[in-house]
Image (cartoon, rainbow, N blue to C red):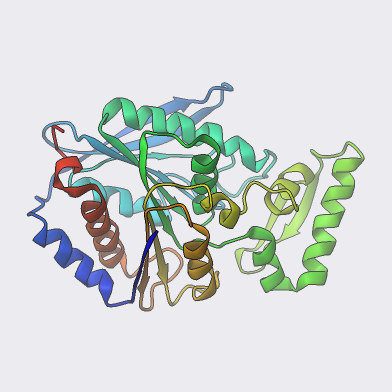
Length: 308
């Protein structure tokens, strides 16, 4: 495996690399609102951002994080930025989107992502890139580890939180985090898995989780663990993290993720100085980092608009 570690200044250099590998025109972008249907019958709202002109050959599926949706935060700016340089981007809601009660197991998001990948591959049959923001990075890593979907050519993780139980230990301490998990496990064992619990998420506020949902995120056998999932990933991986992100361990998590992706042909880490969790004041740097990296990984023959 070839490992590449980029510092903060390299985000700008990736944009230079994008220009060196060939000029990329800025396209007008159209947005279409669609409804996806999963294999288990769940309907999901989604947006498709597409550049004007010939249909792209490469699509990106961009997956939101906890309490997110297809139109706010990073999903509100990065997808359109990628469409402007020639990618078709499908941005779906997950079934547990928004700030309402969370009652479905983490594993169900695999079906949501599958529906979005099917849509993306239908519209742009050359290749699909998976992108996850925040907890969306756990979702897309799990999807790829579980399915080894051959249509997916690369994985992009932005502001990844790492293991979700460890995140809670970092915020609340091990004793409190373990106590919350054990309460949910007890309810689940008693057949009360759909009962709602008020869960303190620290800087994210309070939320209503079912016991089943909480255990699926944090339990010892959780499929949300990105370190285990990345060990099964065999496509190039990009990790982008801001140094001003108060929600995650921005120094430790990216390096652990990089080390976990042992089977990936390359893993690149880009840090953006001062960027917060949503890259709200660093949108251009984020777009440059992702677009430049994709251009380098896919090459001009497999890039947007290619006939190959």
